Amino acid sequence: MDVVWNTRYNTGIHIIDEQHQDLFATMDRLRKAVQVDAGRQAMEELLSDLILASEQHFSTEEAFMAKYGYPDLTQHVAEHASMLTSLQELRTKFRENPQALAVLIPTFMEGWLKHHISDGDFGFVTFLKARNLA
Ligand SMILES: [Fe+2]
Ligand SMILES: [Fe+2]
Image (tube, rainbow, N blue to C red):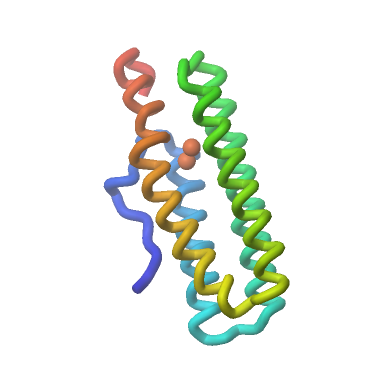
């Protein structure tokens, strides 16, 4: 099954939606690379793309939240930081056992991202809407 962005994840903030879509697309590329056994190097490059895109996305979101004085910023930053730590640990494990981890990582990331957008990012959207900022 494809890993796809869905309109239910639409925050209404253009750059954030674009970045979420890009994260889903990269997870899907990684999953497909695993399915066709694209090789360790191709998978590791996609994994690095995923980490880089996550870092950029988290920074963007945190800058928005800081700009608007979002009260749950600290908690949200901690969730992002914890995800980046997990992804970096998974990359280390991937280098030891590429096959097993290549299957696990997109599934783990997809579950985390869907949950985080719904429970975390939407908290910020609700905050903005309540103040007529979004
Ligand atoms: Fe997000
Ligand atoms: Fe977030």
